[in-house]
Image (cartoon, rainbow, N blue to C red; front, side, top):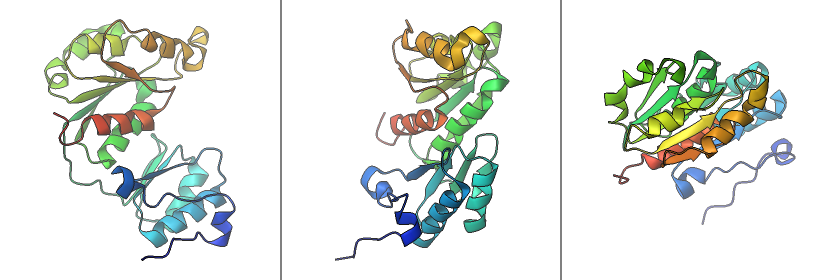
Length: 228
């Protein structure tokens, strides 16, 4: 029987990594970097390397990214999504297709986080940008492709209306991501969050404000093989 893994002394002071998550759940570990020091993130990356554990590093600032890349120089880094992934290449896609919509360019960082998460969890994924309801023809131009998707992720701020519109046009479930984009009354994403929770279109699931990782993960699970 294999011995339980014991983290290095320095790492044990602040983290115990879930190296068996992929075996237990079918999806790899994710490390939330925001709030951690660069030194802590670097120690975690070193443990990831030593155990050869597939890992996503989310909400990584520039110092976090530098610390990860010092230990995992071939990791994929997307500064816009604030995401690093190791190993850098996603697995061969399986299951259904995931489409990610960004209502506006300002929503793109969250949408990119969702897209890359779903892709590195093994799904075929496509990102469509700047299709907000202020110009409804823009999303209608992609309607045929939307109807071919197993699940659609919609990242939107301001009034958060786009997920309801999309859900009313397609049969697939919609994962709605409110973003902290908008003027004062948007309240840092609270206004679109409440709009999405009150959607009159059925089949809309809502994740937390700016939670692109959570949206991408949920979409990957919905689109998993055998979910037809």
